[in-house]
Image 1 (spheres, rainbow, N blue to C red):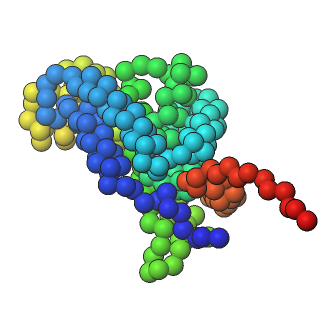
Image 2: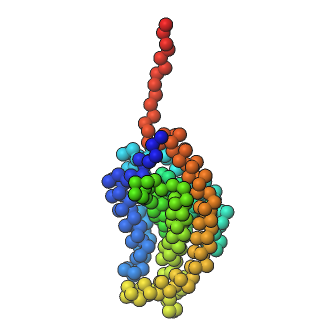
Image 3: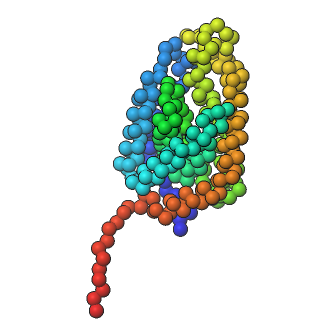
Length: 269
């Protein structure tokens, strides 16, 4: 059995589309620092680019029908997990599944899993609102990051305890990064214009940045710390069997291997 997975390698086309998509979505996050209007409409372009990513991955064979089927299964699994936490105090038991699955199936698949699972779970839980586009791409970037983790160090595969520790650290980082990204969409509207932490439309970059950082650390730690604890704990408890099961699925289903139909030939005496 081959110990490395070809799906880990991003094609040049995937790199271009992912970079383009991420840059557009990033503009939707950081607009308060550079633009006095609202750039949330830009997520329409970013979502269209994500759809194009899926189509292009299918077209070049990086994602086949079996990968799409598993993408649907994992999206449904994460969708079912999301209501268990309901987002209370940051307790969202979805990130461990996204991180571990992306680790096995690679960056573009992980990005698409983050996008699709966040979209479907929002539809199921009634979490549709102006924040959804931010959540979609924040989850997509977490899947992209987990799928891009190195497979080898010094020519040796990263497995066992080392891999689990790496995923736990990623889970902690992702928990705080998600809180930071979501505060970017929340901050311009929540405080009005009369506080020392309020967003100043058209204000100096340094002034708005310092106000945002102060707002973030004053408001989000009660959410980010529980999210990090829950995510890292779930990864510690489930990473080994979850990784083993997904890798077995990968090899048993022969992902990215073409399906061949052979005629049965009866032996003649």
